[in-house]
Amino acid sequence: MITRLLRRALGAAAVSTVAVLVVAGCAAEPTSADAAPQASAAPRSVEHARGSTEIPDDPQRIVTLEPLELDTAVAVGITPVGAAVASNVAGIPAYLDAEGVAPVGTVPEPDLEAIAALRPDLILGTEARHSKLYEQLSAIAPTVFIASQADPWRENAELIGEALGRQDEVAAKIASVDDRCAEIAAEYDLAGQTAQVIRPRDETTLSLYGPVSFAGSLLECVGFTTPEHDWADGLQADISPENILDARADAVFVTASDVTDAAAVPAAIAQNADAFPAVTLVDTSTWVAGVGPHGAQSVLDDIERYLAQR
Image 1 (cartoon, one colour):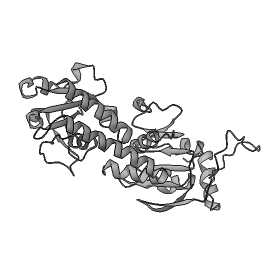
Image 2 (spheres, rainbow, N blue to C red; image 1 turned 90 degrees about the horizontal axis):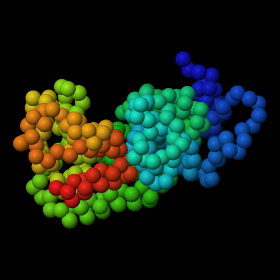
Image 3 (tube, rainbow, N blue to C red; image 1 turned 45 degrees about the vertical axis):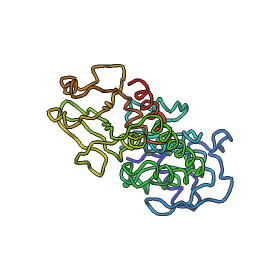
């Protein structure tokens, strides 16, 4: 059921061409501290997965529904007022060190009422995940969608930069990632060496991340080669523990919520230690969920640390 707050938000958008959300509840005008900032210039038109959207020239109250969007905003110094989270338990990723971001449901199931209550002037989402919510989100505030979280992260970040009015800053952050990759590649000759990212799902499934996945692309960026598998669009391939030898590589990175817990290494790998001489536990929150220029630097930190210590 759509609550009174959300009904009012939807109704306000339906009768006005100006994207203003009126939050009712008392007759008094909102204070300057409570009111959403006004755009400082004429709106801009941004082309995205759902067409063209007019958005404020300098949006101030941003809600993100995809980890990449949150990461990219924080990377250029913007703290969104709200963000969908991977899970209610995980909350806002700690690696971002972003205070004051209100959770607005989960990435698969954003909370429309919570979003409306924040009075955003820009919402960033994903067509692949949030397609059915686009009209309702657009009734709350101008909404821009990337096509899919599975698309190359650099291209998605560029679109987010355009929506934020920070194209040059986002481009500089991406260039910084690529420059650092080149520096690492120059310092460590990784030609012909393979690397594999493994994410344990449960006792029966291990996900291998491919060359165009976020973490996989960064390993390739510094000079590693991803072993060949039957990748789904280059992103990932699932195997059972019985086929763990298919995941062999010169360097193996296993994602975990606690990188200090040796028990996070799958039993199938531990039982085949001779085939996996170099296994490193890495943080799931950055290697899997930390998609974006900020998270990329964290992943490169881990890669460089591994290379320096091996």
